[in-house]
Length: 319
Image (cartoon, rainbow, N blue to C red; front, side, top):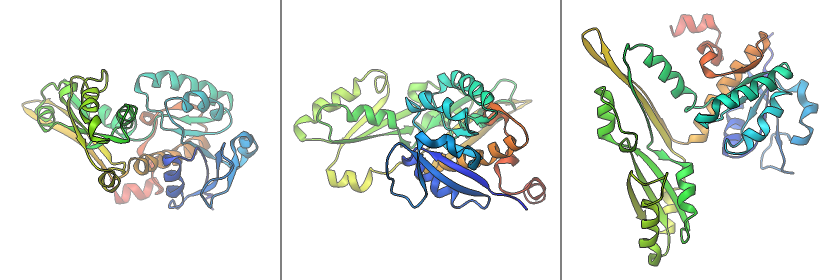
């Protein structure tokens, strides 16, 4: 008789809530509980103090780290990996090697597995970049993000004095996408447009617009538009979390030009990120049961391990 994978969640923001709902839909997973520093959460799932998490080690096969990458993950993830097999969505690309080394040491100390940087970028986009680039002797590759909400850029505009509410949409340039498919180099700053939607008093509009378009590191050099809307319009049309993007790889194969595109259109970013995370949680539990320890990445996980179906079923139905 097959025993279901016993899961736990640390963190209960947007991602944690999505992971909770997704685990409930899995045929081979049960949610043991949510670990939080808050005394109470709006959930029917058992809630435990994160300070007491060590007492649950024998009741959790995989722990989903639904923590922020900016500060929480670097400060907390390794301590959890010493006690549990973990899955995270660490997404600071430049610091992933450092995160991998830290998680590897912690997981090996606790005889656990740490599956890092799942999600869609890093994660699914990373896999596609490797797969598609491997097909071409001289690949030309570009990654586009959007149409979607950029959390970092949205936070930046909300910090401007006078901005009551604000969101920034990243929009791929159609000309840049066409160039990438043709195998032409793409200027990173020409690859995307930035659309800002702001709620602010009319007297502040000109100053806010100027502050945005001249903001270094965020908007300078980009095709940026700033639209001011009413509170009601913002509430009705700009409170969602859509996202997506595509990886395009192109090049010559013998005497022909070829292009490979992997594209995502996400209605709600945390739901899709959570879905990828849960699938990799299944793989992490299976790999640990097979004896794998230390930190691994999505590059090292065979695709069949993500599915609730057996390998034989997948070969018969999908190969």
